Amino acid sequence: MTLHIVSQNNPFVLKNCLAVAGPNDALVFINDGVYALATHAALVKRPLTYALAHDITTRGLTLNHLIEPLSYSQFVALSCQYNPVQSWY
Image (cartoon, rainbow, N blue to C red; front, side):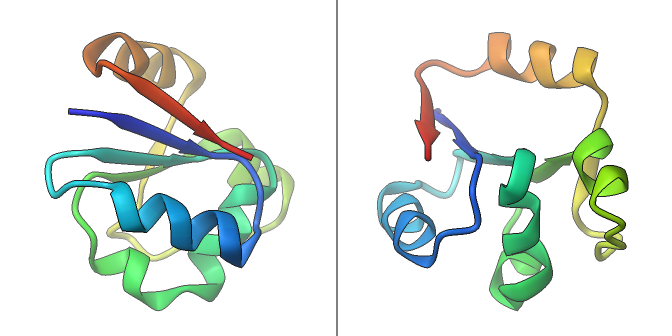
């Protein structure tokens, strides 16, 4: 089970990430990556999709209720739960 951390809103990066992400892998969107959640409707239906709450708020976004917001401590806990952790930027 891999944790994929998407930190930018780049369609090529997101496409590559989704191409290798398995059904039991988690996706966490941070920094400008949270914009991808607002523009790619298919991500809302994907299980195990999270976003850093601070980054959502900072950018003034309102996301679908199916996207679970994470605090910093929850993000750290999730990072410890998965192995490996893959960053996409």
